[in-house]
Image 1 (cartoon, rainbow, N blue to C red):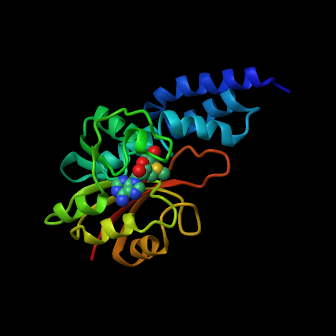
Image 2: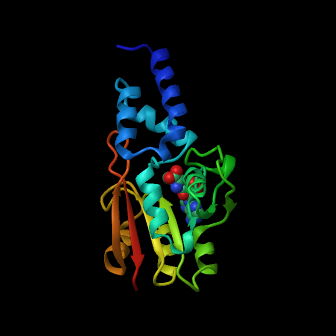
Image 3: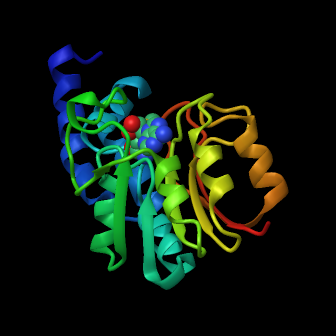
Length: 211
Ligand SMILES: C[S@@+](CC[C@H](N)C(=O)[O-])C[C@H]1O[C@@H](n2cnc3c(N)ncnc32)[C@H](O)[C@@H]1O
């Protein structure tokens, strides 16, 4: 049984090493997580990761798939949090913009650190201003039972690529309107495994809006 100090040290090492996760494969990350964290509860590791990085764990396969399916190599993260995904997509050579309606100290989702420039804007306002032509958006862990993600995607032009990261229907992300929209108004292009925290069931799913 490890002491609290030993556990904290393990989490600290995990958070340091996690900086390089976006360049590693999903299985390499899983292996690293086991090596670094085998005696910790999933909850602690997730909390620490969310505060420093993001709600989902970027890996090389996810970054490559987003880049491959994006239109004109451009993407907007519409609920960017700390901007960790945005930073890593830009590092991979994409043209990235990022918005969030609560940045810095106002963010209630644990994101006090910014890895990228994030414009303070509601995603529905952004969608209204960007619905003339198809675009590519990223949404990772849209808040549970909130309607903004659905309102945003509903407004965007047909042909838009939606890189959704989160749990599927019945999980802890978005609401039924969002999942009905994916089911009835989108074509599923690819589903990619990402490293998951203990007890979480999130994936990257890339959709094309067809209606
Ligand atoms: C669960 S966090 C996920 C953050 C980030 N996508 C990630 O994976 O780490 C949800 C984020 O959505 C943002 N958000 C919620 N409603 C929004 C809206 N209407 N417009 C823009 N951002 C919104 C929150 O401020 C928060 O940063």
